Length: 373
Image (tube, rainbow, N blue to C red; front, side, top):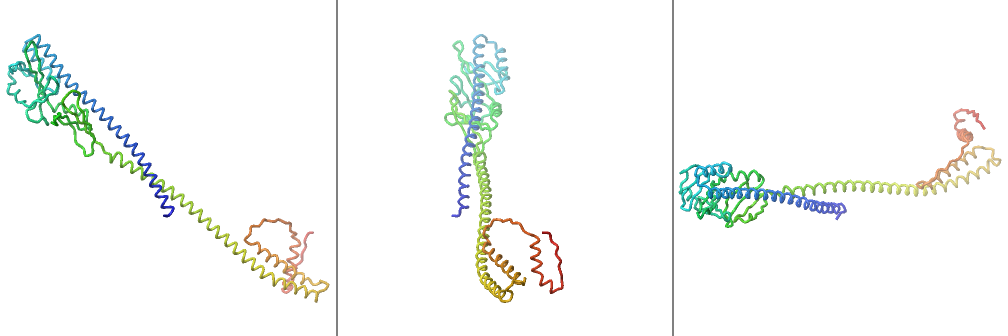
């Protein structure tokens, strides 16, 4: 496997591990927020039911006191009317004696008959002293339930009946649970009422309410996909993208440095080859130069024994210069140090003039030099 492919796989593994850890933190935080909302909603619902029970009990306690001290029908009817007006969830309150006769009514005498009371024939225990009753066999989605409380006053039994408007009660629950679906069920699974919309992805908590024979279920929207999985995938992609970009930058830089190194090696190899070629060429040139130089010396000994002819000097100097140039080929391609020396410019000009003298004479050109010492 190529090194670059290994790096990509390592990037994927690293991004995956980091995204899983961050996803776990997101999931934990999301669950904590959902549980806090559940706990808050649970407390509010319990408080609402507590209020409902305490208000119902307060009516019964007040009636116990009133019936113990007075039989004033008008006064008692007015008291019942005031209470069903005060509490929005109560539509009607009336009282029956032990002979099942309606003796007091919030809507006035003879408004309610015993047949109206007997319509609520399916009973469901609510508290130790009270009962919820329905007109239908099921308590599911009733418009009205009848809450009855038994009172014993001066050895006489009374039944306080309050018609509960379930729509009003549900509306109050809706105000405190806009994000949740709330269900109240009996122990046998009978649904008493339900508030709120259902969702595809949900989380539910179910609990028994204190000493009442009911269970309460609170269901809230719980979207792991949109709140946990998708953010984790996004984090994975971002981390992987950043790592890939850094990897590509690092690889590009490494490739560039390697390319420069190869170029440098190629140049060094060229210099080495040039140096080798120059050395071989220098050796090949030096051999004939040596022969030429020897023949020049022999010719000079024959024709210019007194060394009066400058042409032999020029030839000898040029041969020496060629020899120096050839010698420098031996150092081509090798690092050399710069050497600085003083040059006599006047002598250099004289040498050039002497070297060019023959060609100048052939073209009838005369040069006059006037040089400082």
